[in-house]
Length: 267
Image 1 (cartoon, helix red, strand yellow):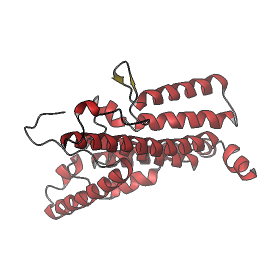
Image 2 (cartoon, helix red, strand yellow):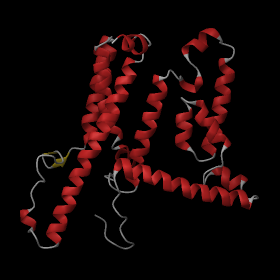
Image 3 (cartoon, rainbow, N blue to C red):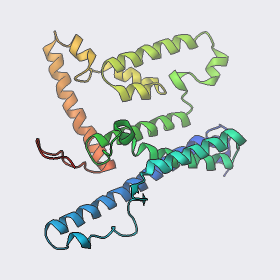
Image 4 (spheres, rainbow, N blue to C red):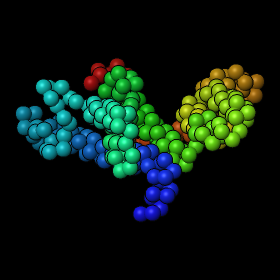
C-alpha cells in the first residue's frame, strides 16, 4: 500500500497511528467484556435474592470472568502496565523501524487502554470502576484519543512543531507565551480537560478561554459575582454540559451503580 508508506511511514506517524488503533479497539473490547461480567454478576445476585438458586450454587460466571490469582483479583491495568513497560523498553533498546515499530506501537496502545480504562481506580486508590467516580476513566480515554489524533495530524505541543523551530525560531516564544496564557485562563475557568487537550491543540484552549466559565470555578466565583445574569447563564450551561457528558460516559462505559442511600452500609 503505497499511500501507507507515503503518508504514514515516511511522515513518521506509523507508531502513533497503531497506538491509536490498538487503544480504541482494546478499550471497546475491554468495556464489552467488563459489562458482560457485570450483567452476569447482577443476574446471579438477583437469582439468589429471589430464591431461584442458593448461595452455594453461584458459579464463577462462565469462561469470561475476572482473573483471580491466589485469591487476589488482578485488575487489567496490571497487564496494561506490563505491556507498556515491555513496549517502551523494546523501542528504546532497539529503535525499531517499520514493521516492528507498528508492532511495538500496537502493544503500547493495548497496554495504555487497559491502564486508562481503570484510570479512576489508581486516581482514587479504590475499586470505583462501576461507581460515579469511576466515570473519570471515560474522560481519560476520550482525552487520550483526542491527543493521539492531534499527534497523527502533526500538531506539536503548545502549537509548535519541529519545522517551526527551524524556520521561525523568534516566533516560537510568542506562540508558546500566547498558548500558555490561553491554557491558564482555561484552567481558571475550571476546564481541566480542555486545557490538557489545548496543550496539543491550541484552538481548544482558545475556545475554553473565550466561553463562559464552569461553575463552580475560580473564574465564576470571582468575576461573575457582580453579574447575576452571567452567573445564571453559566449555571444553566453547566447543567446542560453535565447532562451531555453523562450521556457520553454511559454510552461508552455503562451505567454506574446507584449511590448508596444515606446511612446505608457500604459494600
